[in-house]
Length: 365
Image 1 (cartoon, rainbow, N blue to C red):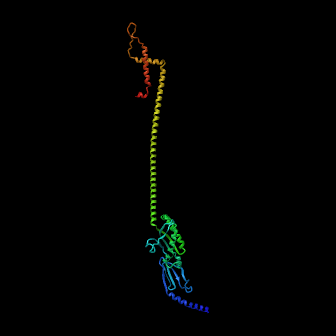
Image 2 (tube, helix red, strand yellow; image 1 turned 135 degrees about the vertical axis):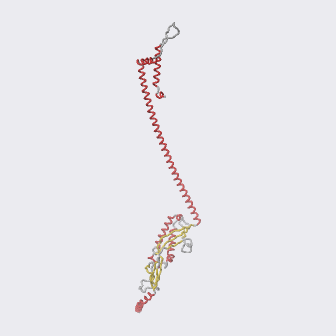
Image 3 (tube, rainbow, N blue to C red; image 1 turned 135 degrees about the horizontal axis):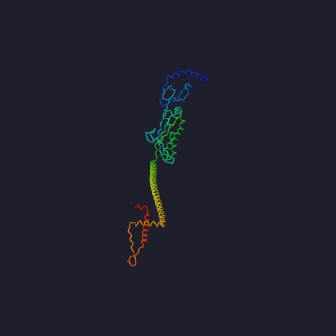
């Protein structure tokens, strides 16, 4: 009995299905997507598979188009796939909500800190249907139900591994921001959300601790400045030392050059004086030998003859008086004229010899 009734019902429905389809087609509605939106269709009734499978459709409708679907048996949802910014900051009016949204946690060394964080994200168009089924039907619902909770949790877990000092080092902050982006991508990527970037903004410590950090940074900057000034002074001193060394080297080279010139002049004068002395010595030796030979010649008969000749030349033209001497003639003494002449000639020879041995310089004077 049940089999007969079921078969009759199917035949009744099969006969009226074309009529129902025609009626639904007459009640179609238009749906469109913006240039940054994708659409997702949900079929509530499919008439036993005649219109496809029931529920959320896997197909994603592209941006910038208009589509026609039955009005009563379908639902239409759109998602904005453009880049979105989730701002979690402490300043009211800048965040997505009215209250403070900055991340508050403790650093690895136990200090309280609040950090402004901005996460750039977007919906994966290929997984818009998955988001509709698992998260929500709008972009805002996806942000509030998935993106915000995940970002606050993951970013906080990454940042609380940093020490207080590391928040002042830009390279450390950038490295942690990239680490947070990678972990968020691993968590939300399979859910249909693409995380493009994590940006760390201002950070705020407890006011008392922040003053301690500020004073410490000032002290470090002062120490670095003093070290830098000390290094600059050292470099300047080294430059002055090198300049002084150059000047001293120049003066030494100049003095050595002058000393060399003096030595050359002294050597030249010494050589000249030596040559002159040698010439004078040779001249004296030659004259001495001449005198020696002359003395040797004068010591013989020829010498006596020359003395007599010189005596004759000296007495030439002079009057010679002979005075007789006798015992009774008076008080006159006798004189040996020959001896007198000999003594006079010897005196003249000695005088001539003395003149010949006198140095040439004295004769010039």
